[in-house]
View 1 (cartoon, rainbow, N blue to C red):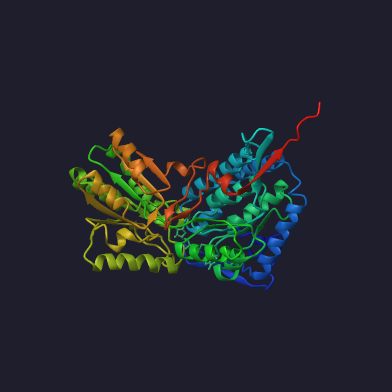
View 2: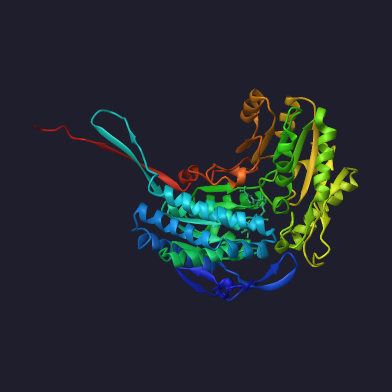
Length: 487
Ligand code: NAD
């Protein structure tokens, strides 16, 4: 894969340019640890220029478009992304380290987001409200203006789709700050937008570090809405910075999502979901189903079947398209490994580990998937987001106990319920603290149409689906009192 020349540039006002300070950051292939190029290191001056360009586009060619014209442009971009799925997938696999088939699913999801939100653009509108006689009252759904998007490295294409694309569909002008660890497909997205004819300044992309580019974007007084996806601690900092400008914030943060498996569950159906939800993208997934709660009657047999599957998982370079790729960085590997070490040292039982492919380069950031069983719900491995291929299994006896354990973490992003009992499904769906609940499935293939977001330490606000359009707009109420007719 060739790294495009603009990989080391920022994209502002429709132009590729070097970061204002001329700074660059190394670009690494997580599968080998090798340096493969450089990316731009945007700083406060670039943030400022991007916000200014976004504002100008709102007052110019982007702001003048009709909703239908915006939708058509996004739909065109969707077709272009769909036509480039293989090259985008290869780029993402190389940059993030995720196996090709997972990267391909992300590229397809981005195409689908563009199609979906392109279709929504001219179907999202205000309401008329019955009020006092002689009044006509209606609401206008208006874009916030300039939206800032700070995103992580784990699913760049999917997160661009659900955040930036929804913001554009509703007429905002976007400034996107991708993560320094993986920003290539964000730059490709800018290239495709320009080729599709998106007016200059409607989309600006400024790669860089969190401190030098993310923090100034969150704090910029010209930004009218901030969408942040990332860790809870940084989310708190972003919300605090935005609060000084009294602008709304969407926070898509971490998770420790439970899957509850009852004695009557269809285990053949559940098994592939249970394993995949824990190790997809090497466990670096906010909605990873990393806590499996299992009822006592099937505990031993399910643990044995899960162990068999974990032991069969193969880990290796992204391009080899095995079950699991490397982690994003040496830092992430060391973080995850220290969780695993502490788990072992505390006496936790390891039921199975995956295998590392023989050809995996020694400089790659590989961690073998690991299954801990008989874990106490209060153990740090059952409470903290690990962001690696680490799954814990916790036994329970009753539904009440399962619910108590499931709701016993600070996070509340996603939950899975595996049971054939319809009443139990409905009861638990109501009682689980989560933004999404899956019944007899998990993750549901990306769920472009399905509102997504968390409660508690998992954040607030919703992206994905039609619901996202509410978050990226503000409501203006217009109340008109009619004078009495004179004839
Ligand atoms: P992170 O919080 O370190 O970084 C996320 C983004 O914020 C990056 O672009 C980073 O450069 C930027 N950033 C860092 N410090 C900043 C600061 N002080 N001000 C402004 N921006 C700053 O997260 P990460 O390690 O890149 O990603 C992993 C985390 O993201 C996990 O906790 C995961 O659960 C979460 N995540 C959540 C979702 C979701 O939808 N809920 C999706 C993906 C990832």
